[in-house]
Amino acid sequence: MELTFREGKIAQRVALDLIKFGRVRIERCYRLKDRFEVVYKLYLDVLWANDELIGTIKKYSEDFEEDFEEVVKFLKEKNRVLKEILSLLETPKSVEEISSNLNLDRDTVSSLLDDLEEEGYVVDIGGRFQRVS
Figure 1 (tube, rainbow, N blue to C red):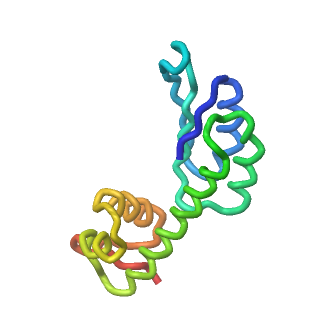
Figure 2: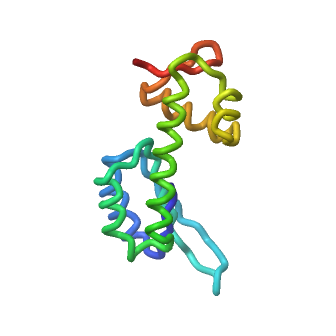
């Protein structure tokens, strides 16, 4: 997830609040919008979004450029997709099978499976993934 801030100090404060939910990094970027300007991109790598995370993000919704409702929609959709992937993995399945079943891009499924594996939700058994009981 990515949030854009105009002030670095605010981005740092938000990062300190979000670090408990996952990996956070901030990058200073240049862009040309109405004029040439510096912005700060906050990247949050989190697997599951819960109400506490959403509440923390909401506290800063006036400070970042993205629409808060769109951020929440993205997080909830990611939760839904993760649950669908896990529900398919009663038996081992390949990335291609999951991608086809869910009508999702192969790279997206592969990335989400990597995240699920890293967190211990699934195991890779010779290129086929299965949910951990």
